Length: 317
Figure 1 (cartoon, rainbow, N blue to C red):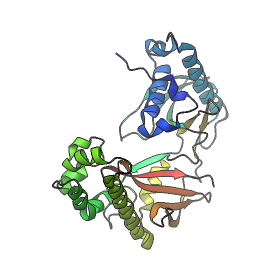
Figure 2: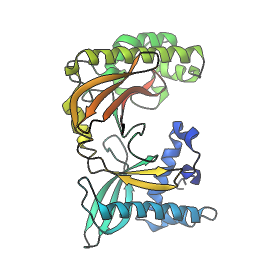
Figure 3: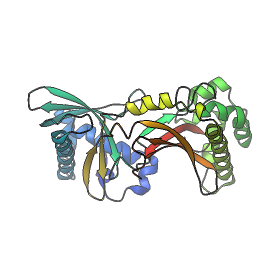
Figure 4: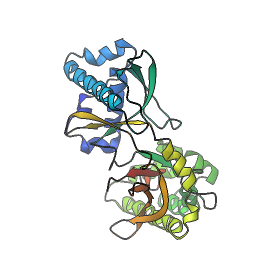
């Protein structure tokens, strides 16, 4: 049986639930069903006995936003009159967008669209528009270990000690530390249950995470050649032409935007951003539009446990 999303994923007050990712997943599932090329899947929502009319409005607003944007075009997307026929949800780390969209042009030809679904008023000032795991080939050159390996070498023994277990091997750790299954390591299995807000374990893990991030970023700040601008630029180039469709709970509507070449083009101006306590948290690179591209180094799934990653955002200021 197909799982159905909750209409509450499009409600105005969803901020408190965003941390779990469940609301984002429901929005993506809703668009997948509402724009499926299988009409029976669309009907699961459109003919819903309670929320069918509401789902119809969401479907109409999504299609209308895409059509309006395509009619005007911009930043490398040619102006095209037509209709959004269907979308296919993408998944996995090999894809850097949420949906393949099939757009039927007035000429009768079909154009494939790369679509990324976001929440908010704009792609600017989002918590992130791109995420890169802190592993080999992302963000830093081969002259320095990626943060994941550097953290293992300098801090994993202390994390394992906190759980009173033996640390995993380096190869095992680097193979599995980017997942979401806390059962993969003995220390993550135990600390996940103990990492409760305000607890001594929670405070210690946060201290280790913030301290390690600060020291790692200090290395990059003192030697800019360690930052792999070429690799980062290639990642940003992949964002060009992608349609970012942002759902605004306040406006109750979708907005479609694309990044300009200038916003995705990096300069060599590199610095760091600090937390209120003075510790470094973020690598900052100015783009050719004069805006800061910020790469926040963080742990996705509990501090020091799983998912060391760079969370990349772009500020309009």
